[in-house]
Length: 179
Image 1: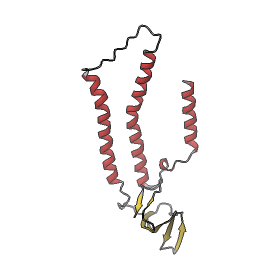
Image 2: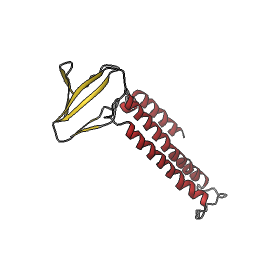
Image 3: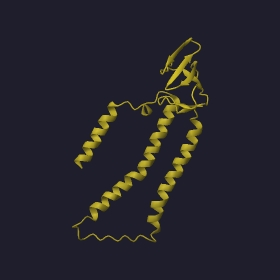
Image 4: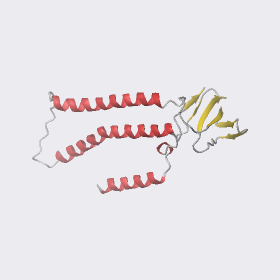
């Protein structure tokens, strides 16, 4: 038990110092994606935690040397138990599927955002092993570095130079393919 506590403390300490960009959203779409990740993780814990609790409980209760506990593995015909172990995961998968489906429609990176902030247009060119960001209004360009004014809405016009590339800025939105 002490080892588990030490590992959890170490994991929490590590996660507080590391910058996981997906978990540090800066834009509207990324924030909604973050909420979806947290919801899916919490929903998954509804299955994972009881499985571990039952596994530990069985290991403790039916360990060798404990003579008063008898194990009877026949659960055939126990409708209540079967409903729980088939129904709960099925219900969770259905809920997760519905939420993910609707979220994928609302988090479309090509959908225009309603914002009163000024829109900055950036032409993005996918080159071999790098990205070229062209700011036509400012008459400047940069390689592999996208600069956005704080609070501005960005419109990315993506063009590939190679057969297929994907642009993913985890703190802003989902992945967009350029073909």
